Image 1: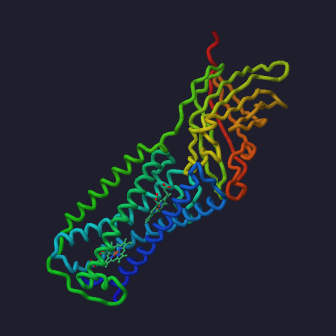
Image 2: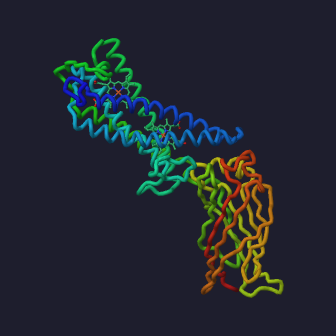
Length: 409
Ligand code: HEM
Ligand code: HEM
């Protein structure tokens, strides 16, 4: 069988591309839907998440992403090959309606082979997820920021485009079966292994209408995806904002980050809404105490990559039952260093905590930072996750802030 196409039939390269990618796409749907079902169980408040569910979800998602990116590159090669080759004409090109539909579907299929994996890849790159791509590249993409809005939009676009692809495949297969069973022509046979020439009809559909139809469907899909992503609650942290606090030192800027280790990979996130009430004087009292601090954190303001919903759900931080966490501490000097000595409350659990604080004050502005490692089990977070390999017990918290001394009256 010849490698290249002729005007009468497809060559072996086109056929190999066609059937390899067709098989891979079938596997992608199976992987995508089953991984998404497990993710649904993990997010569901009334289903207890087990180590096995997490391990399987992670495995299926990593397979999905790795295979999907492989399809992306194969599709580029396939399209370059198709451009370089003669295209066998349709065997029923004189049936304008059917032929135009068939060609529009071919455009949709070619475009989907690029757009579907690309939207999934952008989604992966815009979030810190726990299921890595197994290729040594591609965890991040240029021009794609880690951003909840970009993530929500690309997830919605990926979701809609997979249905566009599914619809196109359905029509495509229905067409192939119709040719084979009803028209009894060689359309399907010339795509199967072995040489099969067939004479195309003299009339063939033009390109304009099929391309315009495919473009209109993509525009609608992208618009709907962007709109759904824009409105998605995942893009905006939930929960009422904390009221401002009065304090000797007013926080002007800062960040409160956390890092967890899931399945051996680090997932980082942050709380966007927190307040700190700080009193601090440079000269300590007789007991070495400089002041105190109360930090209140709005749990629903957490963003933690693709596991945000899970982390704020009832098995973990239980944002609905316990919308805030608090840290109350005295700022004391010990062995020449500043330490925040106090209590950290998460959910209904309190633990004593002692955290070194780095502090520099210049012209009435304080720059402070610190970090802390806690054991999630002390706070009843993820108690069902007993295997450290699935979800590490240690959670790293780090913060920094800039505060200005309030004017004295
Ligand atoms: C031809 C390639 C691809 C196909 C056909 C495909 C198809 C699918 C399907 C059917 C789902 C389930 C959607 C649902 O029911 O919610 C899905 C989800 C997903 N896909 Fe893909 N995908 C492809 C490529 C990729 C790639 C390359 C990546 C990342 C590198 C990716 C990442 C994801 C992610 C993260 C989800 C879960 C989305 C969510 O949780 O909302 N996909 N994909
Ligand atoms: C699942 C993913 C599939 C994709 C992405 C896909 C994609 C494509 C594309 C883009 C073409 C046009 C090739 C060209 O002329 O340049 C094509 C042709 C063809 N496909 Fe598929 N296909 C898939 C599955 C299938 C299946 C399951 C069947 C059979 C039941 C099938 C049967 C055919 C036939 C017979 C042709 C030749 C059409 C003709 O000669 O006019 N395809 N396919």
